[in-house]
Image (cartoon, rainbow, N blue to C red):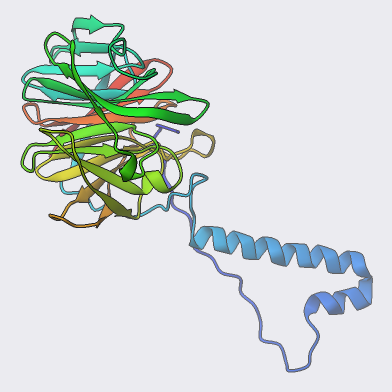
Length: 319
């Protein structure tokens, strides 16, 4: 995706055609009769190109299929800088510490982003063939991490690996339920108010159109919630004030489109919820992919982990 600042001010223009008399031949046919088939083909090509341009401007979507929806944020966000870190998969904050994940590594930082701990073989004790950690959350002294085997764009052995947040030792491994239909797991978030563990999916297809709820205490699958207006390529999820926030790597560097953050308001027992555009990440001036995200309510900041040329976290002050 593209992290730079851009201005999209596309004009909406429609072709201005003149009404023809009944029975009159179209202008391209008239031209053909006067100047031959070459003129006809040329004018027809112009008409087709104009129609395609009008359609593109009226309903512009990105190459990843993302409509440029209007933001309806719950608050203001002001870009506040970035820090280089040792991982680009996930990020979480709790009690004065940050945790960051790479594929098989968990790192811990203080609030100045100085590293204070690291575990390089974080998946060694996880069952199956897991080789990839995703986005994470930390709650009540435990770190919850999306874990799976990921190779050639395909995922298997999906689970949530649960670690002691201080020692980074594995405590248990919650298997993703086959009954859920989830086929990839990119992130996990804890909702303490409902005792829920929420999972998201990155891959294209049916799996990414849902969020998946598990019982936090016992790991039992509860339900899946269909996302209305589901963004593609969801990389991370976090919970704040009962709402889920999703980071989506749905921009494209090749056409200068940024990634996005979405908000999902959940209803008790509901089977569907709307993904509302919360933030367009146009301030991030670096090629890369939005990965995990978290809120630091002590500093009143949104923190987004990015897979750039070097792993970085980007900060937004909450207004």
